[in-house]
Image (cartoon, rainbow, N blue to C red):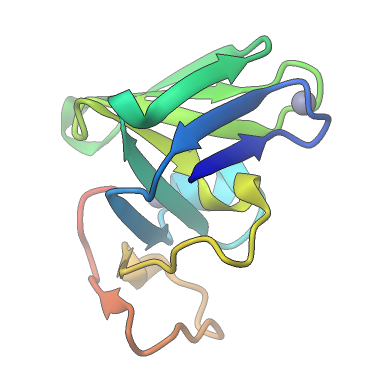
Amino acid sequence: MIRTAQCNCGGLTIRVDGDPDLVAVCHCEFCQRRTGSVLGVSAYFADEQVLEIIGKTTCYEREQDGGKMLYYYFCPVCSGGTHWTTEWHPGHTGISGGAFFDPSFPKPERAVMCKHAQPWITLDPDIRIIEDANNN
Ligand SMILES: [Zn+2]
Ligand SMILES: [Zn+2]
C-alpha cells in the first residue's frame, strides 16, 4: 500500500510503501513546538520503504538529549514538516503522522515523554504509556 504525506501547500511530498515499523505519540517539548499542537505522532518507516521525496526541503539540525542528532525537514514555502532522520533510529525515516491526513493510518502503539503531556489528554487504553523514554 502506497501512502503519501505532504506539507500544507503540497510542495513537499513523501511517498512510502507499506505500514510503519513504529507509530508513537510523543509529548516532548520538540514535538509540541514543531507541530504547534500539544503532541506529535511519529511514524517510523525503514528507509527502503521510502519511495520518493518530491520538492524542496529546509533542514533543521538539532542535538537531542544524549548528544544524538536529529535532522528535521520541512517545506520552505509553508513550513509544514513532513519527515526527519535521527541517530537513534538509524535506517529509518520518521514521518509526521498528521502529514498523511488519513484516518485509517495505523494507530500509535506507544506514547512517550508522557511526563510532559497536557493533563487533559486521554489516549486510547491500548496505547502503552511510557513516562520518560528517549524520543520515541
Ligand atoms: Zn509546503
Ligand atoms: Zn517528541
